[in-house]
Image (tube, rainbow, N blue to C red; front, side):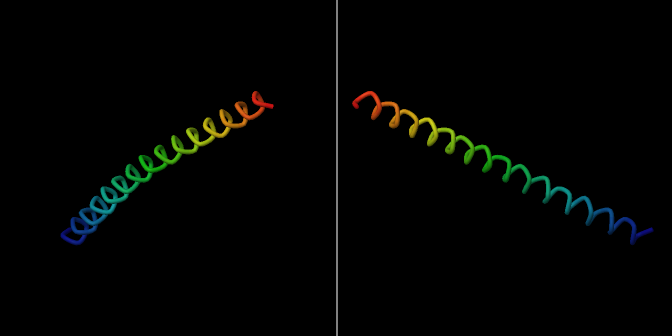
Length: 54
C-alpha cells in the first residue's frame, strides 16, 4: 500500500511539472507567433510602400 502511495505521489508530481512546462511552452509559442505576425505585417507594409514609390 505504501508503494502505491509513493508511486501515486511521484506520478502527481511529474504531472504537475509537465503541466507547468506545457503552460510555459504555450506562452512562449504565443509570443513567437505574435512576433512572426508582426514581422509579416511589417514586411508587407514595406513591400507595399516600395511599390507605391515606384
